[in-house]
Length: 406
Image 1 (cartoon, rainbow, N blue to C red):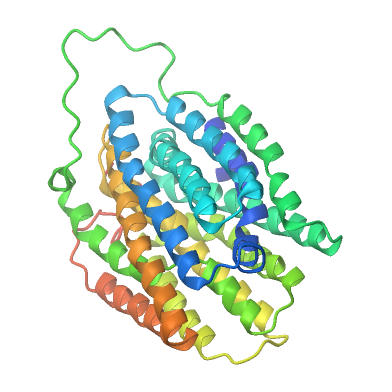
Image 2: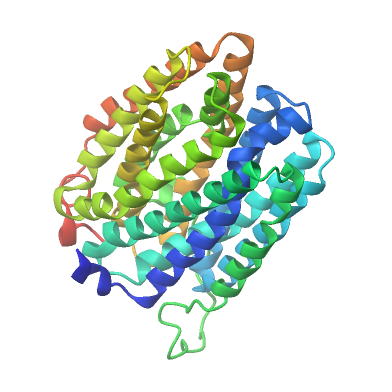
């Protein structure tokens, strides 16, 4: 494993470092949003679902546009720098919000930045590694991203323990946002040296229709859509923990525990998919998510077992986040991966809107038990569909490693 990690290109490590710093800033705020909305701005679960759903759906629309346009221009770096810069500016401004619509606007701006950077960044990662390194590269990226998600909540928990006000704590996210943008400026375009020859004819039109995607990818993305319908905002997990009796200062620690498990597991599990195939790990991840949601919905109080239960949620993240992206790279073609990642991100983000809004409505109108049970059943249905999905050998789902189509 160490030898394979050392063989990864410079830009894989740099993208991972950028994600570590960015997620440290984001997750300084993320686990506190339910507390900030309810305790400071007096908003409820329905507003939380609306904010997260709209923000993520908008982000996903831009991921398709930025992915397709980066394919056309052959450049990823400008999109990445702009995206991280916008997020770094919007996050600390949440400290100045006086109402939940203002938080919605700033979360919207933050997610616009994510929409601009995500697909070009994923396409850059896929371009700089060999097919049999994709699981490892995307797993390392997710591991470093989750490392930031450990640091951010731990810093938040420490500041809360020192009685730092929520608004002041959120404002501190400005510093890592600036560092992250400066690191993004150090990225290099794949194949940018020597410079490409001048164009002698007009560039081909951008083909971002769903029908232009490879058939295997067209069959896989509806499965992703069904699973994402079950995968509402993780903020509901933190809200549920608070309702079960977890003290406010310990809420960030729960999120840190989830992220710590995901950090440790992402690289080896995603790299394992290079050897055993993507489908097996995705089945385990989808199934584990469904079982976790069924369990969390039936709890009535907190206890010493709540921390390890929440930490086990990180295993789902480890077995899915990097592997899903490696699979998209397997099922797409060179020169169109930005568009492929754009469709993947568009579908997952658009489904987050109904998922979060529906979950928030069920949670508030009926009960947390019904909301979590519905999400768990939907995830298990996606796992069954994935298990029966007809895909040709070499697609990345059946046969792992270098034989996957590029």
